Image (tube, rainbow, N blue to C red; front, top):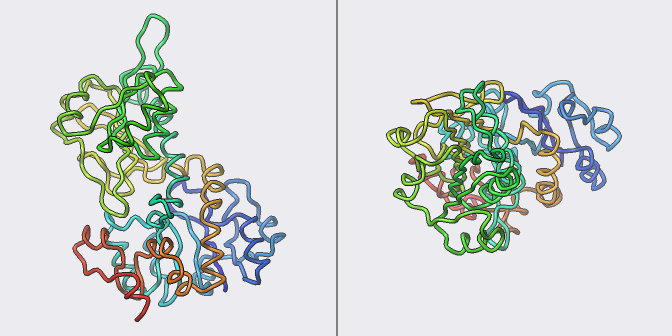
Length: 372
């Protein structure tokens, strides 16, 4: 198979879909790898390293998309990239289609086979290709929130861990999954007072067993969130419904409950955001203010630590890429139900139910679409 790796073009996105080590693995199995020039340069992965691993460097994305049987990316394709996709071509990347009808329509029109990292599952019901970036984003959310709380950034001028004689900041983490657990870990490490909310009592029990009295756990409800907002300096939105649009958990009206200069960090922004006032931002312009509350809603948060993120992501994605290349996409998808859960679009059909429901479009089961 001919595998193509384009340079990412989203704002301040320096991650790359394949490392030289991954290129070597594919090349050693007889596959050809095309890498757009400088695709990894932003994180110190030189063109020469890819060439030494058996890949070929090409000058333009048009050649990558024009020749590759499978395109391996990180972020969702931008409109110009969608226009280069073709029928039968495999796209393997994060997609986050539920809040993005424009991208969904473009992928459907292209006729490609689009496999979303964020909906591939494992035998335990987890999301193994989303987990590495959730770990990064959870940890970064506290780092970003602490910075946004500084007065020069529009925040209240609160130090997350406080100092002797001055109380630390109050952090509320909504969602106790991978993002929430990693956010709580970082906030505790910085000395903040942490409260974690989730609807799963089993998950709250697990976190309580991990951290004991170093944090508080509360069963999540609209009332519980509203009750905590007046006392909270930093809110981390860490909810996830796989493949679907994120639920809205804090309304604009509820912003009035918060102290001026408090901060909301919406890690669910890729799935539409979990705060009513959320809108995607970039690393270049990461925050904005609504009713005196600072919002941080960067849609590619792990891109801020692109080198760490690239290696963490490709550790997880490479085994599936090898299966797709070795067997061909259709056979690999038919053989592995967990990989098949990642299929969102195939030959003009939406094959992930939650995405189809969010967009109000017809749904075709993946196995049925692949059989046609």
